[in-house]
View 1 (cartoon, rainbow, N blue to C red):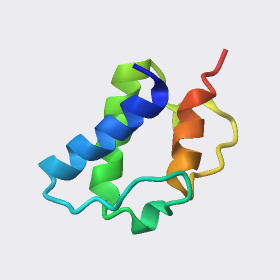
View 2 (view 1 turned 90 degrees about the horizontal axis):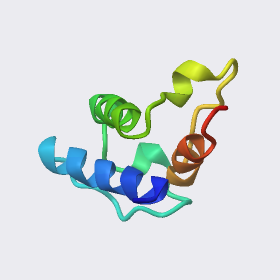
View 3 (view 1 turned 45 degrees about the vertical axis):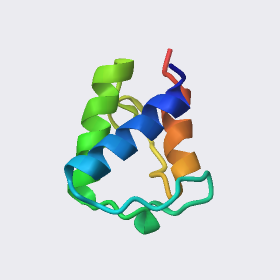
View 4 (view 1 turned 180 degrees about the horizontal axis):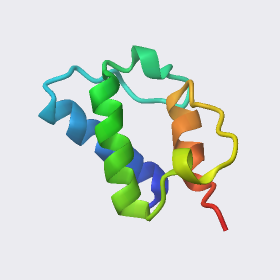
Length: 81
């Protein structure tokens, strides 16, 4: 499964579990408009770390926090060496 597909799957799964109405996901969708809250994002980050083996918020010296869904996906696509 690609990183994008994994992220998409986690957003959908967490939205279902948290009973949140998820906006249609596109690269330009602002995370604040996604329908998810801070707990939902914490769950997604935790599960993504389990799925891909790293947390981009932990490994980088300076992380630009994602604003859009596309930004979020790119954080995980840039696996640290």
